[in-house]
Each structure stands twice: as C-alpha cells, then as structure tokens.
Image 1 (spheres, rainbow, N blue to C red):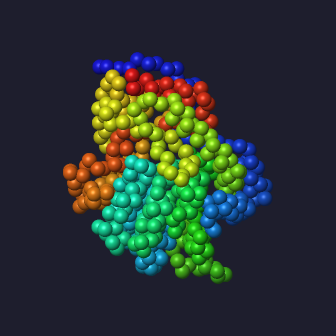
Image 2: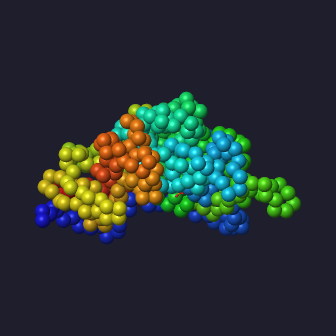
Image 3: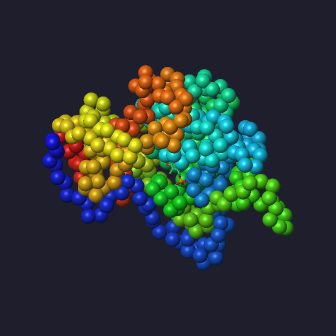
Length: 426
Ligand SMILES: *Cc1c(COP(=O)(O)O)cnc(C)c1O
C-alpha cells in the first residue's frame, strides 16, 4: 500500500490540544479560601467571580455554577418556565416542546434541552461561519412557527451571526440561549459573546481559554432570573427557620476554592487570547499553499481563537470511511483526510481532535429532526437523500479537524506539527 515516508521526531513532552495554564494568583486565592475556612459554596472568591464575569461579558449578572452544563440546564429551565409556566412535579419545563438547536457542537449544548423534556430540532451550519446558519433557522421557523426557544453555540471561539440569530428569534417571539462555553472574550460588533442571548452560559472547564479546573457561569441582564438561578442552584430553600421548599432545587453552585482559581485566571484572559491568536496565525502562515481552509473569521468579529481547525478541500480528500466507532482511510499521493492528519499529529506525540460530530449524526439523536436551508434534511427518522448534498455539518465533520492549540506550545513545536501536516499532502 502507498505510504508517506516523512518521519518527524516525536516530542518528549506531549503537546496538548488545549491544557490549563496557571499563573500564580490562582493558588493565592485558593489559599485564602483555605485560610479563612470558606471551603464551601459561599465566599469572597465566588462573589468576585460573579462580578468579574458579568463585567467581562458586558451583562448585568453572572451566577457562578459548578460547570457550564448546569448553567445551560438552568437556562433551559428558566426559559421553559417563562414560556410555558411551571411544570407539574415529574415533568420538565420544556416537555414536549420543540427547541431549535445548534448542530455542530459539543453535546453539552443540547443535552440540557432534553433534561427539561424538550425535543431538539437541529439546525444546519453554514460554511461562512461554521456556526448555526441563520437562513436555515428562518427555514425552521417556516416549518414550525410555534417554536419559542433557540439554543445557539459559538464554535471554537469564532463567533457566528448570533446578532442575526437574535433578530430572527425576536421576529418570532422566541427566546435565545447562547452557549458561549468556547467563546469567552470573543466579540461580534464589539459586543461580547455570551451577552447576545436572553440567557448565556460560559465554561471554566479544564481545556477552555481560562479555567478553574471546572466551573461555569450563567449570564443574564434580568435580576429576577439571576436570583431564581442562585436559589435553584442551592437546593431552592425558602427563607424560613427550617428547610422549606416550594420549588425544585439543584446542587449546582460553584465551590469557593474553584472560584479562587477562576479569579486568578481572569486577568490572563486577554493574554491567552493573544497567544491563541498567534497560534492560529502561525498555522495559517505555515500551511499556506495547501488545499485547506482554517476556521473562518467573519466581518466585525474578534475571535478568542480557542481552537485552530482546518478543513481539507474536497478535491484533495483521500478515501476515508467512518463507522459509528471506527475509521479507516486509504492513503493517496497528493491527497489526505482528517484521519491521516490526526494520525500524523499523534505520531509526534501531539494532540488533535476531529471536528465535533454533528448532533444529527449522533446515535442518541438519530430520531431527531434536522433542518437546512432547503428545509428538512431529516424528518421522521428518514434522511432525504436528495438533500444529503446540502448537509453542511456532515461535510465539515468529514473534512475537518482541530489542531494542537495549547498556548504553552513553542514555535519549534508548532513548526514540527506544521511539517507533519504538510507531509500528509505529499
Ligand atoms: C465545554 C463545553 C460545554 C460544557 O462545559 P462544562 O463547563 O464542561 O460543563 C458546553 N458547551 C460547549 C459548546 C462546550 O464546548
């Protein structure tokens, strides 16, 4: 079989996709929590994180939670209750209701809709932004004018047209949840990601642009929402001399120790963005001339460049077959595919990753509907064969991958990764 011969020396120390970068003050604030004995879900660090996160995102209120998934869950719950009223015990706030959702994203964007009993309808991606396609969303509202909730996620820190998405939502009287887990610090028209939705969520997961090891915030301009979320996230206790409960509670509050880490990280958000931007630009320069395209940057946006990614141009794709759990490909001269590129990257002890496998392709959501610009691509569990061609999410997934984007990666390391990628096209 044909094989490419380039051999590059592997790194002694693994180059990660995106790993935590600590600076020092994180430990100081954690220690403060320890020394003052606020080893709890109450404390100075949490209060600070809430005020910093709100100011940074340009919203009035941030509620500190144990992760972004729980923030998205409470976004769905509060949106559902606003739209449809409080559910009876044993029922979700979105029960039986369709919700339009980003398709090419992490499943944590979408699962919370299901926690609340909602039925996700996936909206295709556009090539221009690699985010939810506003035209496909319009189409979805033509098909289902009664839908009242949209969940939009920014991909890899490169904003899409969340401004248009919000406008479309307003035209249809729908609420918008913005999952800005990957896009903290990024802007569109000078406005921060996470501040476009009626409710927003950000993440401090270990591989995000800044981290607390875990953690998240729910963002809102509505003080009543902020108060409700704070109450729900701490077991929904009423103000009474005993444990009195009128509402369903959750144990979703952020720890004051974790908040110390996040507090110490925030001053370095801009620095991390600058480093990630340099990584993206070095890939762009180093991969010049190859038949690839990197994450698109649309007008009037400032990405946070969290993960650099590429797609291989169609005519330069070798044969690649993906099953549910396994993949194979046939190496070919002058052509390549994400699997070969990811193999080349891991062969030198670096870490890449496929593009998020679109939700409409996931076994768990195989019955779900999927809408593109031309209307239903998948309906009643059946894929419209004539529209397979316009399944943009599947195409980007098939041809794309994320590149090592760790902000501690040296220029020399990145040069070797670039060399390995170039070798795949020989
Ligand atoms: C990381 C991520 C989440 C989940 O964040 P956690 O803090 O780990 O719960 C949600 N949505 C997207 C798009 C993400 O990338």
